[in-house]
Structures are given as C-alpha cells and as structure tokens.
Image (cartoon, rainbow, N blue to C red; front, top):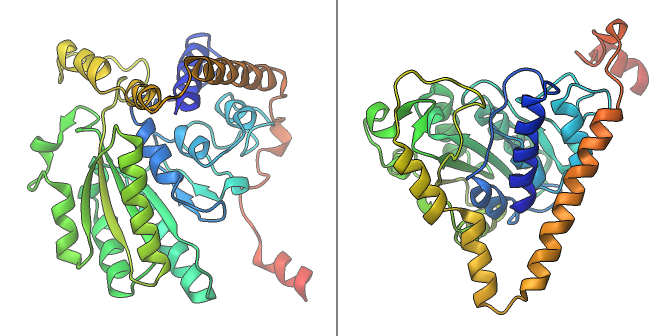
Length: 317
C-alpha cells in the first residue's frame, strides 16, 4: 500500500516537472481496496484495471521501474512507452490490461474468466472498476452472462463516491451498488475499502467460491479518492468541500489505519520505518531507470499494434 502511495506522489512530481505527458489519475486513497483484493489471488490469476490503475499492477507485484518508464513514454516501459498512464498491461503479473474507457475492462475480464473455464484451468479473473462504470451497459451484460454460465470472475467496484465530479447519489437510481448483484443471481457484498484485511477476507471468499465453480461475486469496496479526478484538473465549481477531503485523509487513510493495526498487533516501529525507507529507495530507483531509458524512435510507431493470425499460422504450421 505504501509503495502505491509513494509511487503516485512521485508520479505527480514528475508531471509537474514535465516528464510525464497526458493525463495522470492518482489512486491515492484506494490502496487498501487494491492490495486487499490482489492478495487473495494467485500469481497466474488475471486482472483488469481502470483508467486509475497505476496501483493495480503494483498490488500484483509489478516492477516499479517499468511502470514509471511507461508513464514517461519510454522504451523501457511495460508497454514500451505506447500505453502510458491509462493503458498499463503487464503479463509478468497477469495484468491483462487497463483502459481509459469507463467500464472497458469488465467484458475483457469476463472473457478472460470464460476462457479459463473453457480451457479447464482453475484461474480466477479479478476485475476492478469504479462506481461510474456500474451505469455502463457492459456492466449489466457481463454480470448477466457470468452469472448464467457460472464464470469464475470477481467484479470489484472501487466506490469512491464520485464519477469525476458527480456523486453516486446524483447518478445512480439505486446508490447501494451491491444490491444490483441480486438482479443477476450472484452475491453482492459491501466492504470497508479502507481496511485492507476486510477487503482481503471478502475477496478470498469470492476467489474460493469462483475456483469451486460456483460463479461470480460482486464486491463493492467503499473507498475515497484523495486527489482530483486527474492531476491538475481545474474545477470551477467545488463538488466536495475541503473539510470533507481533509476529514477523509485524517480519519480514513488506509495506510495510517493499517499502520495502527500493525503497531497494536506488536509490530516494531523500527520495522515499519525500514519498510518506509525501502519503499522510498525503490521509487527513487524507478525514477532513475525511467529517466535514463530511451524514448521510442518514430520509425517504430507501428510496432506492436496488432498480431497477425497469418504469421501465427505460418509459425505453427
């Protein structure tokens, strides 16, 4: 969780320095929802993310160097600089893709899980999306098919209360998102998304259920976005008060909450300090790697854009 937070903070500094182009959507505040769910997976279990997805590959164990280089559009990035902030894909940790399209990963995750079932393997696919994606048609179509065919997929909604500047109450006819699961005959569970152990427990139960062939689960992790929708976004009319944001940071920071838990359980303060120092060093090394990695050359613009089935047939005969 701390690794995600420090990575995002450093990323925003690099945006200000002009080294990261395009949009930058920070997942600060979402760390417990991400890590708690990812810890319930095996390494080979696939995962899809969102446009706010720097944290998800980290939750699965991805290398920070390649992630930072991707943000900077460098050849050393996980997508060789072609994906950028909203399109991470890292096969080394079974991260299928992330998408700038709201809800874009939901049908991909459903297809991934269906593919695993058709191949007779016990992989479970974890699908992250935000509260805004619940109003997309792909959400309803995917959940209906997954329930009907008992597909091994976990749908995890990171409900931070706002789709850009519009609150859930203003945009959802039914603001209790977990209740929507009943319409598709699957469990719908709401969990405190700021408490990593609570998220892990419900995610682990859903994973066990999916591996046993009992079908999908919808988990709604109530979390909070500490920064704006994207870094540097100017909002002419405030949609949430400064007092609300500060209260969330003070009382509901998932890292502070878990730090307290660790201390209460007897973890030595020195151990926590060592973790903090190691994370800072890892992020520093990631920046150094990204800065020294070359930019892609224009002549390679069309590389990696598609895979030819003709070439595949020639390889395999």
